[in-house]
Image (cartoon, rainbow, N blue to C red; front, side, top):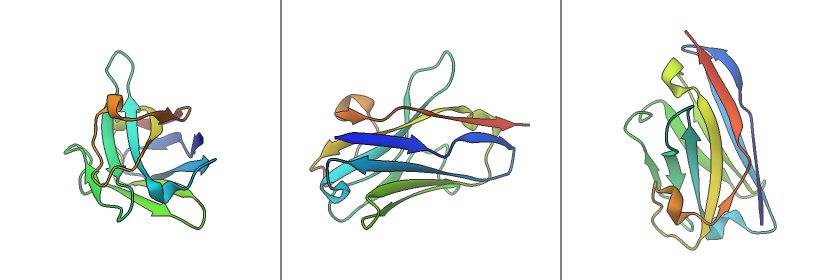
Length: 124
């Protein structure tokens, strides 16, 4: 089971980025996928998640209306579309997976497999 996160970069406030989480060794549809972020000096926090199966989604209040999580089963990839980025969105973003969760959760401790992080920097 491997997860590869990509798509981070340096953008200005108000711009957009799309992060990708490519899975190998397992079928995404059977796993809940979470996106998390960790800013310097802060704890890792849940940003968004998508459940296994039907793909219900959830978002942190801080990103609702700006971020969208989606799953492409054909590409075995989960995306995080981030619009209207703010400087406070600056962090290393991670994706993580846990099998057979019909309702995803925002808690890092609930996830079993983790990808490496991708850095998102939003300048003001």
